[in-house]
Length: 461
RNA sequence: GUGAUUGUAGCUCAGCUGGUUAGAGCGCUGGUUUGUGGCACCAGAGGUCGCCGGUUCGAACCCGGUCUUUCACCCCA
Image (cartoon, rainbow, N blue to C red):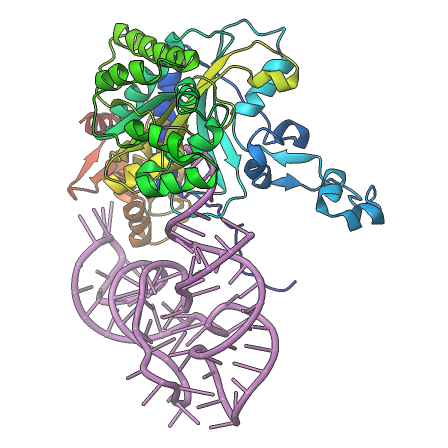
């Protein structure tokens, strides 16, 4: 066998022990909050049938799906004619499974499959990796985790308000100081398209105005012209695009007049106000919650509220996003189920926390005491003590080889183990251990009981 | 999918206009120290210069391809 350089696929990553400690901290923080709000955890398989996934994310999304080659003789069903007609004909015959692209569509599939077992409203959360065959770049990976929380089977706007609460709670727990939860409503965007005289073109409108912050006013206008918007309609959009900093209340006041000609738009505005009213009744402070009428978001299935969270002071895309979808389960044959949900991107949250340098120290995570033994006899005693430490709830390990003491100590040092328990001939005779505090360098001969309490006391500090 | 960009020791990076035996810091191994880590000093190991091909008397360096890294666009967590 020839030597090969080990490697992993493009855009995918290994996570070492210190990264995992931090990632788990994020997962646990988010999980706690989800549970606190009454969400129950669910998992779905990494692969779905391609028919479940395709057509749900637009043409672009379909391109970004990882397709899995059929097992066995995957070319069996392909004829020469199929081949000549191109990949569109070949693909469905060689691949019927794909890796999940997000957690929402598999969830919709789950709801329809288990519709009779579910009591509605159904609140579920899900924290699993998803895969996208995108070109990797800053804050963008081909494999990343999403932490989704969705409610289906109710169109109550309390759900939206609770999502705002959850986002704020997670961010407070993580200690992220400066961020904004942008919120908008798809119906407001639809209304805008109507009142400027471009009814039905809200799709193009959304894609263009969503980029306002990024590409600037003139480029947005150019893009709209390119999409066939008239000069008049783009001009009519002026008051929205040329936004100075307005408070949420000022925006509402403005849009009440601006959208007066569109019942859909007015409905969106009312929904938004109601969400904020519920939010306030829940005790939520409007700080960090920003109404942004040009927030659009790509995913086509959103029909009501949409949100997106941006952390200030870092150049990383949104760390969370979501919205309401009225008919996501419709394509799977279950109509009339409204849902709303959102997702935290843990990998981006990690990047943000890392860039801001606000990950807390987590020393209590690892081994608290390591046993160092001089020889065979000492090691026998060491094994008994090892179990005693563990029984007392102290994370303990024994150096497994009878290496030089220096080497054993070195290992403990590298691994940042705070205590080393030395067992030599003298300790054996006295039925004691020499407990060394690696930070201070102080060492003391103690009984097992006293050593245990010394370690426990120090970890409480 | 489009346009750039990166690749040299385990890691971070030098390496001049193409010229003999490719360097540094950190890390690693051993020693100074056979009952003690960090600090210091000494010694040592470790590289098909991403891969394939081309130009040349000669390539880490120039050219082409390919993979990878990073970044922007599209889109998105």
